[in-house]
Image 1 (cartoon, one colour):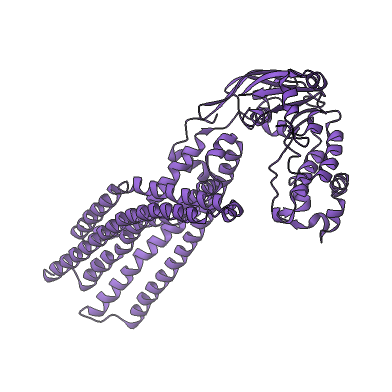
Image 2 (tube, rainbow, N blue to C red; image 1 turned 90 degrees about the vertical axis):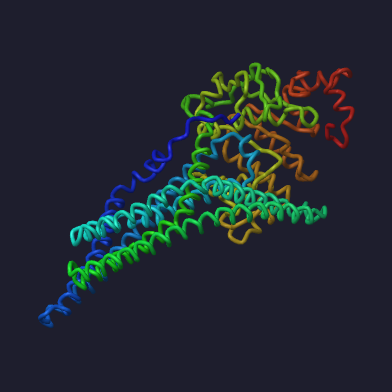
Length: 582
């Protein structure tokens, strides 16, 4: 079962994906510092202009033009630096979060099927793309704006302190108090935002599942239930969204109040100093202008605080996902499974969500031998094959393939040498070639066409407008054609071990005969495990095991078991209908 491990801390996780962007981060820091410096320098030119105009002796016109030019140049250059900083922040954020998305997808692909059965596809899309998207927004905007705000306030306080220490102390105190209040409230809505993200993931999972089962819902008049359940989920989401928004509005109001206080205080101080002849009119303008410049930092920090809280919730969910431990992927690679392997189950047990599925199953399969697994629904047949393909990890016992412990094998290498066909065939919205080869560009087109022809799909391929390059979708294939295409994938893979799990259950009799012939060729010279209810498939096995309630209750040669009227296999045969076991 999927276990947990220690997740990387939030700073460590951010550092891991930001580290490849250090060069761009340095450029970003330089652009941001330049933008702040220029924005703070521009009012200084205006202050000199005002003092020059209002002085006892008017300033030369050339000096006024020079000061106006300096103001215009500083303003334009500052805007250019801000554009560059925004562009760099976007590039850094998307490069980093795209690497995160890649690693999350890779991690989820490695997790056991039990995890994916417990989480709908829509929920996983939200957790991978939605949560990473929230982080991208924070990296590209929130952190940029917060850093810019902090630099702006620091520069304003420094310049004002040089102008008059009282102005610097006043604005610095108010700015510090404002930031302390904003930062102190950053966790107020953390729980509410986390619940909102969870509700969005639940909604995405619900929609994906219901849209996927649209045919069944329509055919069985399930639309009213779907709409009722949709209303319940969206009602909870709406309440949580509004709850988080109320906190956001409260933070915005606090930032507006802090700005108003700073502006009034700066104006009052400037007027008082001007009346005492301790500050010029240009200095008063500087006080008021710099106080006004604090508006944007406070507004931005307040407005983006809720986004930062959402990102914090997303970061926690990402860390929780990465904390799930995937099966070990390392192990032996070369000189193994070059031919049909022996397979052994040694007292193997498995439980799903604390419910036992297999109970100390033991069996031996010789190299090149075909094992048939039969039993009623829920006996544990499919679980047995999924353990063999390492889609699940046993909770007890050992599985050996080719004499090696399956838990110590390299997963990608192992699965490249095991062919699996089930009754649930996934057809991708891609070309015929990509569907048949499962996106392996190394397989020649001639080989793919030959295999499709061997499986009687040659005429079907000939009807495709662009041959192997034709785009197909699941709706464009019949159930039989889709199943044959799944067989083609295994033929092209040429595995040493073959697992067929009800692989012919969806075929009509004519197509079934074609697949039976192809199956006979596929199993030749390979070790195979077949789960099937069809007599023709079962009788092809060298040995048969009968399963009941997660245990092997009978094993032997098909002919011997069939000849014994007291065997469980014989009773299954007696209850068979139209060549299908009960």
